[in-house]
Amino acid sequence: MTEIERILKDVEFTTTYIAKEPFTKQAFDKFREKIGIYISSLYVESQKIAKRHKADNISESHIDLASEYLIKNKAGRISKLLGILGGTFLGATVSNLLAMTVLGQTYETLGLVITIILGIIGSFLIGINLMRE
Image 1 (spheres, rainbow, N blue to C red):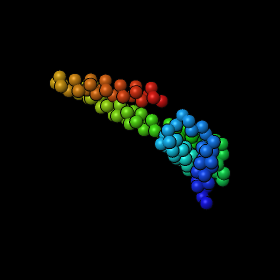
Image 2: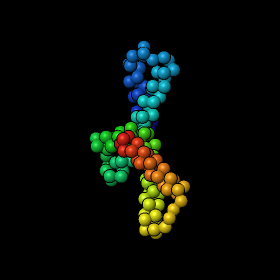
Image 3: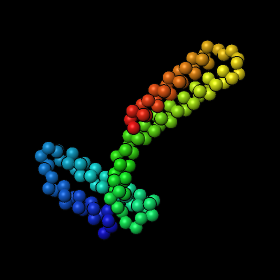
Image 4: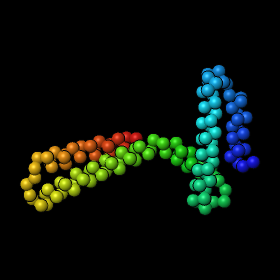
C-alpha cells in the first residue's frame, strides 16, 4: 500500500466520525473526495518542496509552504494573468509616450486615444492584481 492510499484510508476513517446531518448524501461524498484530493496534493507538494531544499525528510516548514502554495495557487493564476496583461499595456503606453516625446512628430488623435486607453486599462489591471495579493 502506498503512502497516499494509506492517507486516503485514514481520511475515510476520520470522516466516518464527522456529523453527517448538515450534509446531503451527495454533498458529504463530495466533501470526503475534496478532503482526499487536498491531502494527496499536500503530501505530493510537501515532497516536492523537500526535494527542492535537498532535505531527506519532510519538515514542518515544508508542509507550511506546500499548504500556502496550494491555497494561493488557485486565485493566484488569474491575478498573475491580470498583472501580466496590465504590465504589457502599461509598457506599450510608456513606449508610445516616449516615442511621441523623443521623435517630436505630430501624432493623430487615434494614436493618442489608444495610448491613453491602454494606460488606463493597464493601470486598472495592475491595481486588481495588487489588491488580490
